[in-house]
Image 1 (tube, one colour):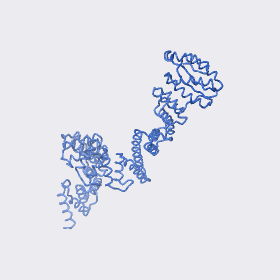
Image 2 (cartoon, one colour; image 1 turned 30 degrees about the vertical axis):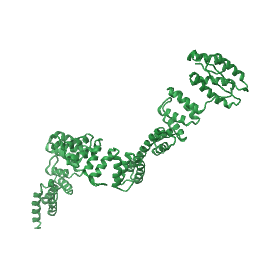
Image 3 (cartoon, one colour; image 1 turned 90 degrees about the horizontal axis):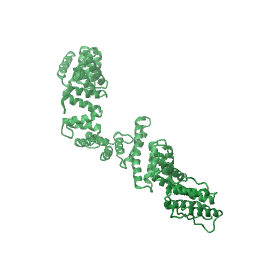
Length: 548
């Protein structure tokens, strides 16, 4: 369609309008302009325009122009809407007609439209999916200070609707709207600060603006609800940030934990489950607050009853150990089960232990195997070791040494000391894998270096006998001593023997007597195999020392 630069072009313009919209749509209507009795100079041109538009059969519209030129703009806006209402004409078309008429009478006046109407025009374009035009109108209104338009323009930039996506511009306009008290603008500004969209991430400012939106009296119910939900989460996230900073920062960890507790409590008191769980953790470990198992249990329970799996597991642990509550195996089992059903790996492992040992539930090796397997598949080393044990001994599943070795290895490679020891034992005896003493020594050493007493004793034997490693009695004594000092009675007996006969160490009957005596004190049946031999050796050494 042709544009209008002066009044002489109106007839051609109306012809274009009729071709575009159809003659039948405008033929019956009249274009009426009612003039005040005391028109300003230029009325003759306006009358000529009236005649031309009337004869062209254009749509009905009322344009009132008074002596006061400032009211021209007011009536101009009304006229545009009237023309649109009467004719279903596009806003740009109606505005072009009215602006041309006014410009012929008042050339010194640049037609304008109010911010509110520009916003409404933007909304009209948006509803018609004319997003470029909508964004342009929102911008005109926004630049005049209209908060709703500022918010809508921010949304256009945030989503890339009608304009190229630009988080910086989105943040700018959301901020403009938020500062005027626009609830959704405040909410979206919170989002920007939380996610670092168009501005540096700042959870405390996010919390500030979410709080503003949640408390905004003009906010609708949905906005308040969304803002409150984000407010709780960002407070919890602030707690997480300070808590993790406390873990990483040795110099200022106490203050970080105090801040973590502050934010967790704010969210926890609003019912946010993760914050309740973490507040329980703070009380359990005494981080940012005094250690208090009762309060830890209180907050664990709050979160657990909302279905938080971490809290359910921790509450189960408290019942298992009698921390903050009376020890109760059945309650421990209940909460472990609740968490395990949500795939909480530690709870699955503990549930396997409950079934394996009959804690709070009837002993059931098949159920134990099931839950160990669930946790092992999630790569929990302890469960992988237990699963290896199930296959090795045929507990809850058919005995299968190959699978036992497979799961021992999985756990051993994660550093699980018992799995390393058992894998070494499989290599030593050729169970589920080809016999290989060198590989046995490799895995025994891995476990021994972690302080595993059986591995230390067995590694000592390898050095003593030269199995998988060159014979070295001094090295044997070193590892026997490591195990003996942890109360391993077999190692105590062997160390006594080394001192009695001077194997790898200087002969010393007093030290031999000491270690034989320690070996004889063993009460655990697992460690009593050498007890008789130790008693005989103790009697022999004491006789040599003249102690009888």
